Image 1 (tube, rainbow, N blue to C red):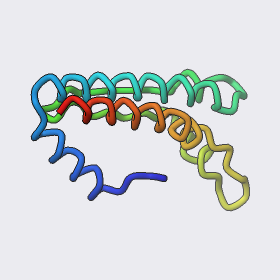
Image 2 (cartoon, helix red, strand yellow; image 1 turned 90 degrees about the vertical axis):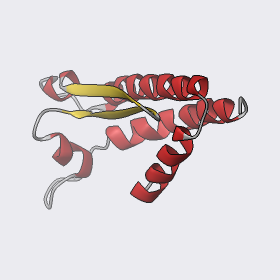
Image 3 (tube, helix red, strand yellow; image 1 turned 45 degrees about the horizontal axis):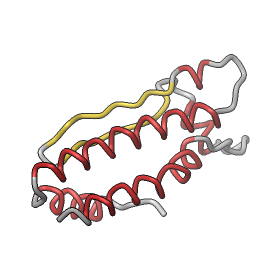
Image 4 (tube, rainbow, N blue to C red; image 1 turned 45 degrees about the vertical axis):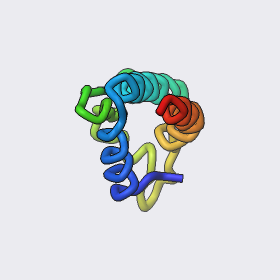
Length: 116
């Protein structure tokens, strides 16, 4: 189930209230989730020339709340592969990668919550 922006803002607000060690661990969990999602997306990306798979990018930035991350392809046609077009069905790779990683990420965050 995708998170909406209000849930993300609420999580950010909650993380700001955590102790520094918990924020550090939350940031580490985000960094790991981004790397894992990138790897899973690369494994699931349809391959013709290999450019889509090779273009997969994952970036993280440490923040006051822990970290934020982003994963996705840099080739312009990545979105059409993921979602499809009016004439071509999608071949999802990023959504399924996120679905695989999300339970592990949530478990890591629950472990941090047990510290407080």
